[in-house]
Length: 183
Length: 190
Image (cartoon, chains in turn yellow, green):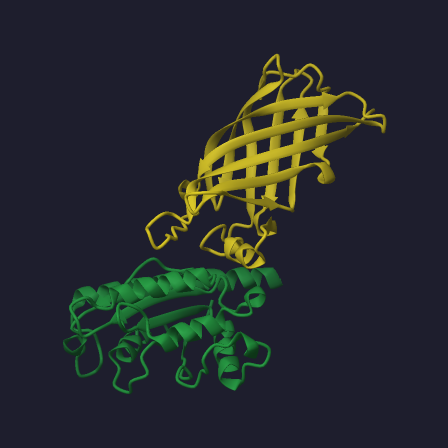
């Protein structure tokens, strides 16, 4: 919570499911990038009268979507997210700063697999005061890179040559379109 | 909460050290733990994806016993630095079809014995890897019983107090995890 963006009017903005996504990417086989997404998530942005902003989010980890369906099952298993015991990944901002050019510097507590760590994310804020359909809309794009092993996502499969199948560094991207009905 | 542990010995030999080790582990289970030893390993046919829809009684028994268990305790010998083929075959059957595999989220622990000085450590690591890939919740511990023919007394108990202590810890951890899963499932039903 801190600096306000002048275009964000006070109130609570909830995510527009169609126009929001939570994705991740990780270096694969030491070469390309592997990408996945979570289908089931929620997010809200609260703008106080004083002008501060707070972002919260929750992701159902067993909604992970990848191009290989068998891998999705493995990702939900204890080797990765352990969705049975830790069904949710959550985020709650501890500071949300908007620069004059609308770039974002956000700190917050990310909880994954029962482990909470403060992360720093950067991105961009966009907004429209009236979408012509009775809503104010705010766009929040944020990206951060975490070390998955710090959260106990410790799969360490190796190629025959010893290279990691999946890197420890994972980039999380959220692209949210958040909506608040106009009074 | 009472739980059920399924013991699986990777050795088919009648006088197997690993079957003896499994029996030694089973003695450590409390009165409220039901222990079942899987006896159908030899009867499993080779895995064939063409047979997945109708794999036969032996595979059905394997899947049924794994599904009914809250924890799996494997004792594996080491063949050529890895696990016995028939044990791998059993895990492969249990892991399929992938969408509804009975082994996903199943608590599992691995122990092992060999007549060499290494106590099947590589086989245990291999089996933990295979079980993890299949989706099990695998305890990251091992018990390496080396020179196995010297390690059991006439009653089949481990003679080395250090090995016995590690076995107690691993069995205790498996039962604790099994209780957590059983409690979680009971909560889901209430």
